[in-house]
Structures are given as structure tokens and as C-alpha cells.
Image (cartoon, rainbow, N blue to C red; front, side):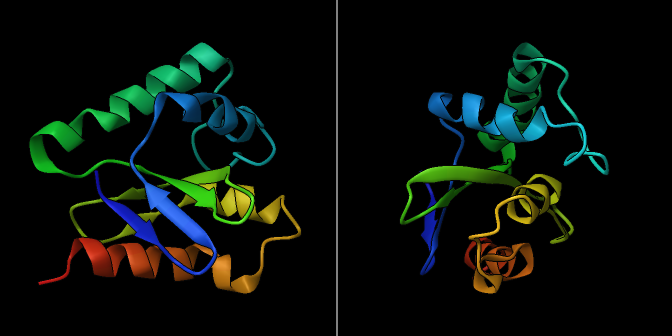
Length: 120
């Protein structure tokens, strides 16, 4: 299992225990207004599992983002084949958590993730 540690974040593969905290984020229609919004925990879990499947065949799937010092899931980042990062859930999560510092912003987190995945 690939895991990336930054100073403040852990970026790792989805775990069963991530569904509830990710539903807290993805179930918030206001925070998720620009991306997928899960109307129920079951819909959220289905969405997460659906997007986890490609990891088995091509190694690419969403990453769970954990606030390191609090050991708390704060989002979900998607890495695509084009090296473009879609971070709607992470962006929504960090915008709703005032304690998250600028260094933990999606562009910084995803730059580290992108460098790790695409390293030669």
C-alpha cells in the first residue's frame, strides 16, 4: 500500500474505516456543491468503492487524505491519468476546517502526491 507522508498530512489508499468520515464531507451538499454529493452513507460508500476499483488494474484510484497530528480524515484526492489532480472533496474539507494551514492546501498536498506517483 502506497502512503505519502508530508509534514502535516498522510495520503493513502482507502480503508473501510474511511467511509464514515468521508461521508461527513461528501454528504454535505453545501461543501460539495461543485463536485459529487452523496445523499446517503450507502451512496457515498458505493461511490468510494466504484472509484477504488481501478487501483487493481492500473494502480490509480482516489487517495484518502488524513490530518497527521489529529489522525483525522479530512478529504479525498483523485489522481487521473493526465496528471491532473481533482481535489473537490479535499478542497471542500479544508475550506470548512479553519485549523488547516496554507501548507496543507490541496495544491501543496497534490504536488507531493503527483511527484510521488510520477517519480521516475
